[in-house]
Length: 296
Image (tube, rainbow, N blue to C red):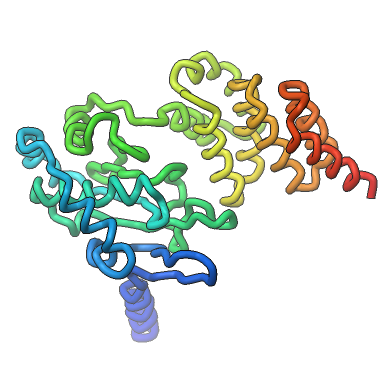
């Protein structure tokens, strides 16, 4: 029995070790993309080399800042989430590797993951590495110390990558999209039933830090397509309160309700969109369509 258990454990370990790295997905009519765990070697080959090697070579980190982070950075582990299809990732990820090289960071302490852009798996990795980590923008660089997240750089640095890293190490850093983090934290702290009332109290704080409707809209879309549809709807609703005069917030909520077949709620929100912009053709056409569907 013990021998069988040992063999099973060894087989399971072997399967984990054998997980593919730099797996390329090619679909007809679309550009190739990497999905799942990747490394610098994968990014330096094939169609990815044209942007990775160029942007890595051209970036010159600030030597003085590098000297300040060099001794501390090795105490941290880092997770990098990116899309090989994403313009921001193509710019920032090569630069990030250049910074790590300059700081003599041991790359075995870096885990790099490529996520998808397809709606059904939006900002997700097939290996599930994204789960529970609020990956709503890419690239995202998450810094851990002793297994606990310390901070992250989201989409692009506030100043430069090396300067942002220094601020993280010194405990003085506020990343981009901090409003999304506040909403994500609230969803983790309270039940969905309580989220509505609690989020209303958060509105004044969000108004100070959320720059535009796209911040929460993208986050809601990530939730919606990662089997957290009700949470996604709750964030879409919150966004209509944060940006009530933006027709797009009402359309996003209405479209998502329509996908779920909740026609009466979708109609109400398409009507709200038309109150904001009576001439909006998308809202008018969608309203007529959803009304016809609700009669069937």
